[in-house]
Amino acid sequence: MRITVIGAGAWGTAMAMAACRLSGHEVRLHARDEVQANALRTQGQNARYLPGIDLPSQLDILSGPLAPVVAQAEAQDLFIVATPMSGLRSTLQALHTVPGPVAWLCKGFESGTGLMPHEVQAQVAPSMQAGALSGPSFALEVARSQPTALVAASGHAAVRDALVQAFHGAALRVYANDDIVGVEVGGAVKNVLAIATGLCDGLDLGLNARAALITRGLAEMTRLGLALGAKPETFMGLSGLGDLVLTATGDLSRNRKVGLALAQGMSLEQAVDSLGHVAEGVYSARTVAQRAQSLGVDMPITEAVVALLDGRLQAREAVQVLMGRGPRGESV
Ligand SMILES: NC(=O)C1=CN([C@@H]2O[C@H](COP(=O)(O)OP(=O)(O)OC[C@H]3O[C@@H](n4cnc5c(N)ncnc54)[C@H](O)[C@@H]3O)[C@@H](O)[C@H]2O)C=CC1
Ligand SMILES: O=C(CO)COP(=O)(O)O
Image (cartoon, rainbow, N blue to C red; front, side):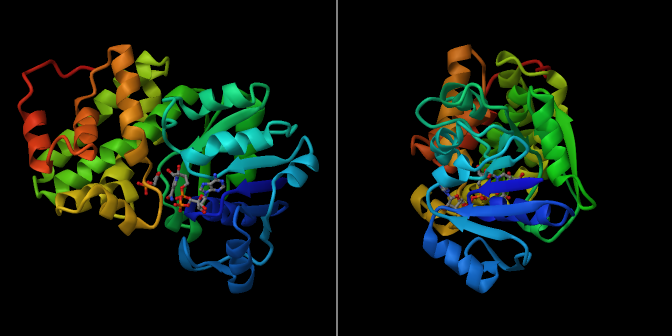
């Protein structure tokens, strides 16, 4: 199988490495920047995004325009879009004529439009056989071959099968799911909730508070998902509860780090700059909240994160707002 990963950040690089570990694959990693591509080739590492990890010698590094790569694509080729959400639309536009399966790794709702990734694809490449690969997965651990489980989500069985064939192996299990709405809502909302949990831990509010945030966060994620047509059980799976627990509690999370930094009194700009990587929750929080409002879905934790990111609330005020809400029943 020939697999082309577009976007040579931490996650694209880790997933290209994972594909290289399975025999019989030809794997290519496309960096948009020629300087970065040359650095990957000469150093044998992605020093900016995954320092200290050697790239497999058989990994082919590409750069330059995508048009010639797309022109040579065959029906059995798999394309993986590993850019942040902000690059999804333009990358899918560039790929819209590929004859085979395409899957994206980004987790978020598109800024400006509020669209989920599969809705962006439906606009720019409606006939594409496409899906999402998601689930609890820090790039560093996948790059190190530590055990990980992912979800291949698509309405097309051929896309789910291609993702399993491309990545399922000794260190990486890939489960198939046809509920792309649920999988994408989980991936987007857990990033916003991880900012909240980082804030909670940074303010030293305690373990009770953290468990409450995660659980009530799962409830609001599920409410939004159901309003958008997702299946409830998806939120109990890898891309829902699984990714929420990982991102909210794992110190490798960039979104959690933003919350921790805000709790220390850093400005949002300082917090984002200190990462050197994308933290999608910062860009998706507002669009998630707007989409929820338009559907009449109550998402108080997400609303508090948006108010904090907008500078309308200070960290401790956000906690007071959440704790000051009136009583309600527990069910979703
Ligand atoms: N790092 C992780 O552990 C995981 C990340 N993800 C998701 O994957 C996506 C990418 O994340 P990372 O690789 O971690 O980000 P990163 O910050 O490590 O790297 C982003 C990469 O995308 C490139 N890029 C940005 N815009 C682009 C465009 N328009 N076209 C081509 N390349 C572009 C940048 O040059 C950079 O190489 C995000 O949506 C993230 O939420 C999902 C699972 C795990
Ligand atoms: O999506 C991820 C883990 O599944 C990565 O989370 P962060 O973007 O917060 O690092």
